[in-house]
Amino acid sequence: MRLLKTMIHPDVEPASPRVLRRQAARGIVLREEQILLLYTERYDDFSFPGGGVDDGEELLDGLRREVEEETGAQDIKILRDFGYIEEYRPFWKPEYDLMHMTSHFFVCDVAHELREAKMESYEHANGMRPVWVDLREALAHNRDVMHRQDSKMGLSIQRETFVLETVEQELF
Image (cartoon, rainbow, N blue to C red):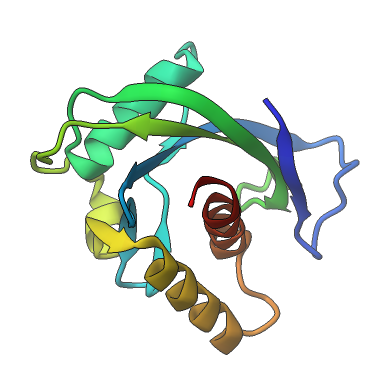
């Protein structure tokens, strides 16, 4: 799988010895001009369905589980890998200096009809919901949100927007 980008938060030193490593899997689900994303009210942004892979869980199994939980998608077919992003960001637990997250992106297909999503409590609290949205509208929206935020904004919206840009360039 190809490296799409390495992102380093300005407040961390990647060579730190106290690093939490985390693997994540995220789905790129396209249907004509639409893409299946998660809209989060709290942050007013769009992101790809997916998330952390559990200990002992295979990457593709984690992808299927996360996409189904967050979107209600069924019959998830993984068509191909798209690439990965390496992130180094601050972490809130005192035993770690930072988190090194590798987000693996895969192009997927899903059944036409979505069932009810099974969001975690924090996802509900943040107002997260699955949406089919025009890719270019989602991209413009995230760019606008980034433009309005200060320089200390998190890496997540930067990661998601970068991948949306890459999807637009390569798959549209």
